[in-house]
Structures are given as structure tokens and as C-alpha cells.
Length: 112
Length: 114
Image: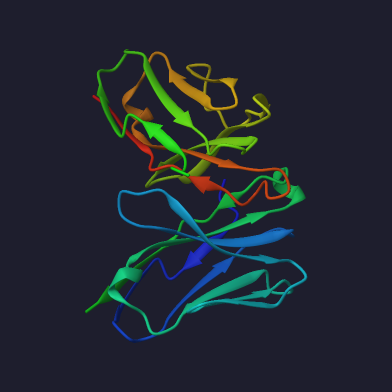
């Protein structure tokens, strides 16, 4: 089952531009995470935001969480070709047995 | 630390054969997860262990799938008999108490059943 749904499914931008990806989920959560997956590789944890937090930063990453809308966004500023990857949101909450449930992902392509 | 290590990286097998996937979690991590990734269904949690004990196997699709964790540094996921619809990338991930849901993933095993 997929709790989170990312939007857009695919995004293509020029190097230096900002990339924004959105995630919507269905039930209440404890935490929301964003992961990156490079082609043919495993997932790498990027950032975790708790349900009582609204915004979090890590380097060029900015994550926001709106629990009233059940949505989150991941902003990558000043994108680089190396940011080309799939990005997944993952949520955990009691509705899913406190297990980590992943969305379908957004494919980001950064053109140099 | 070398991270989560999975083997093999690629596996091609014929339908009906037994397949065994292997995983070595990060040392000191006491949670281990097996995920399956397909285009159609995305990332699905199959089973997870805590301190070598299976906690939730509700994601295991059928009795053909089984997983074991004989010790803290090794786990296997076995499919017997394999079917073409089992073709997917299988990931192992580990985490530690207090950060259970902050998972570190292996590189995955790409399984193709022909």
C-alpha cells in the first residue's frame, strides 16, 4: 500500500534552478521523511520532519509539512546534475502499524 | 562502516527454482527490513526483524516467500519456487533502536525470473 503520493511524477530542470516536489498522504502521521534513489542504487535518507514541525532545512534542502493539508514539499535549491535521481517521501503512523510506507516517487532530471 | 551489504547484486533464475537473497546489516543496528520495489507497486515492506525476531511479516506476498535472521549480522530472503512475477529489486535496510524508522538501505538485488 502507498500512503504517500508524490507530485509531479517527473520533473526536468536546468542546472542552477530550484526543484520542488510535493507529497500528499492519507492518514495522520508521526514523521515524514524524504529519501533519494540514484539509478540502480539503494535509497538514501535525506531529511526527517516530525508531525509537530512545519519546516526543516539541511544544506540545499528545505522541507515543509502541512498536517492540516496532509502534504509536504521538498525544495532543492540551486540544483546540480548530481541531484538527478528519484525522490521518495515516506511516512509512518499508527494507521500503518508505525511502519515506514513509501510513496511512488518523483523522477528528477537536472540538465547541465 | 561498509553500510548494508546485499548479495548477489543481480540474480537471473528460471521459474520454479529456489532463490536466496542475503543481507548483512550495519553493525549495531537491531532492526532489519526487507523491501521489494517494482514499477507497478513501488516500494513494499515485506517483513522486518527486531533483535533477530520477525516482528511483522504481513507484507510477505505468499508462502513461497520466507525470511530468516539467524544472527545479528545476517539475514536471508528465500523464494521457493520462484515465479516471473517475483521479478523485482529487493532491498534490505537496517536501523537502530531510537531511530527505528531512519533506515539505511543496501544497494539491492535485482531479481529476474524467466
